[in-house]
Length: 341
Image (cartoon, rainbow, N blue to C red):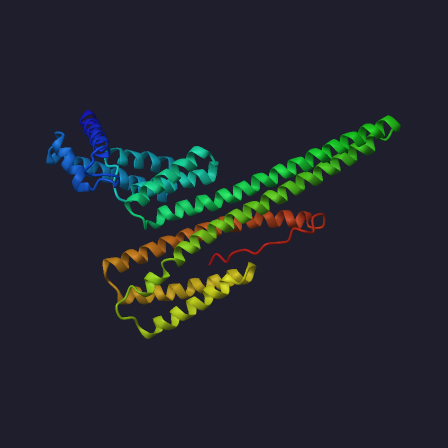
């Protein structure tokens, strides 16, 4: 059975290569019907073709399940097995893009980022409006900017620390050569080193908070981009939907001009109003399009909750450092938590 499946997968690879040089197809991706036509023309029968599609769908389902469970390596393995059979399987490239992106957020390896961008762009060729692929590219761009700033900051700190260390060494050498105060000099050096270590910890903790907050905002923006569709999902909307629409727009305007704890409270109010709108749509809409939209919004809100938890964890670590060393570093202030209710 394994040899049979390998033969079918190899056959599809040959079909795709043939399709890429077929002038009648051009630069656009093959449709499923065109892929099937090429497959049959190269010797596959209907039963083998259907077997390929079923196998690809099984790999796709396993990839999606692993992604939801945050088993990113397994999600990539199953996703790449699916596209090896059917390179044009709907949503498979988006799943691979997100899995690689989540790995990149952990390991920051260039090759992992390149894979995420490659699969996201490949998905957008098939579906230019794919929200998951767009989210992957947006997250990578914003996170890459944060990492670049972080690297520049660390380089600057290294120069500062290097200069301080050099100064301390010269000072110690001078004091030892002039007097017997070597012990006092050593204590002074340790104090300076401890100061620099603490400052580095504060810088890294603050950058981590900023990075996590950035991911929260990306998730919120993705959810908010679906709000207009939510209000247009019903052909006839109850009067309270118009009131909610106005309230939500006003809250979004206030959020754009606020920060810190006040912003978080407004975002909680916005979440509640969107929840009310969802309940009205659930009660008055039963089409597949409405159900799909509600599932997408629920998924986005789960993502928001996940990113908020990560942000709160980062704030906790940062605030502990500020409380311990605030007198020594008055420029660093306590940060507000997101309400996880």
